Length: 75
Image 1 (cartoon, rainbow, N blue to C red):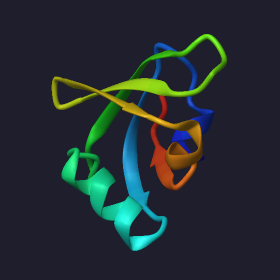
Image 2: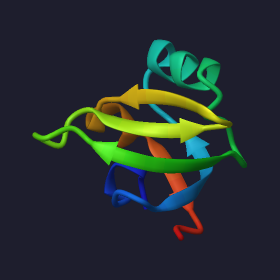
Image 3: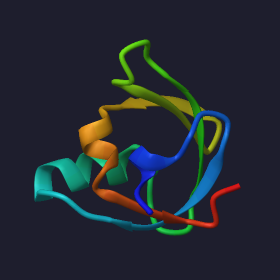
């Protein structure tokens, strides 16, 4: 499953971060690395972007970018 498919209020564990090298580096620098728990706080009214809580920090990602992040253990 990819992060863009996770619903509001659910958590998931990052398995792999893909995408182009610049995008991948940006996501990794925000703390979204393998093994990290990510909580989907909310989606914007038109479902783009999505707000995430990663290691206590609130970050926003476009749904298109979140589609490159493979997650597991959705709760």
